[in-house]
Length: 231
Image 1 (tube, helix red, strand yellow):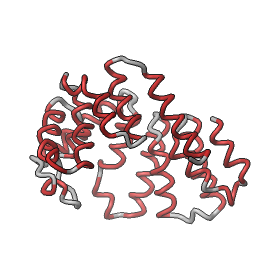
Image 2: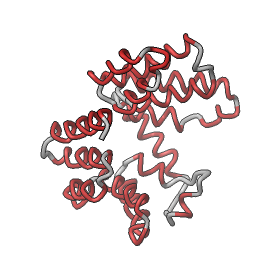
Image 3: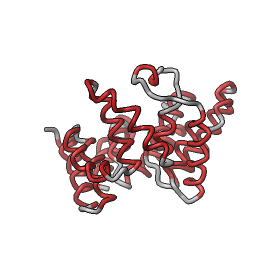
């Protein structure tokens, strides 16, 4: 195992240990195990909350089943619906048809009504400081802007910046992708902007951001790239 992989695995294990044994932790522990590709251990960790009908746990059980295939495929729609009916917006958006036709593939009880419900719930969560909800609003709200690419890019960047500021580390990667797709990432100013986003998430221990920064070593030097793993 390379030093980088060892470091990332340690980060995941420490996250698991930090959350302990609370009911909330069982979902977080399961997610940490998923990052290690320990699918069955993840389900075991979340099982108490799944049995308690925790909407987040039900959602992740459905997502795990999506990756597994087999007979579990027939449970996905029921799990997502139970989660959505309890107000979990991430489950709701999975019950809206997309260009990938996932509803038909997984035989989901999709209905467009869930889109507006998900947006409304994310707006409520974002108003209370939930960065992940802000990230989803940036991703799904005001889809009309996709027909005006430049306006869409500027709007998304502003919304993802807000999401990152509110704690959604995933937004750092999305911002990097936005800059890569719509601007010249080799331009020093644009590169510094992208590195700024990634550094914020890396300082919070977000491993994907650390890896992205490491990939910039040809521009910032190996020593500076390695420093990210000391956060």
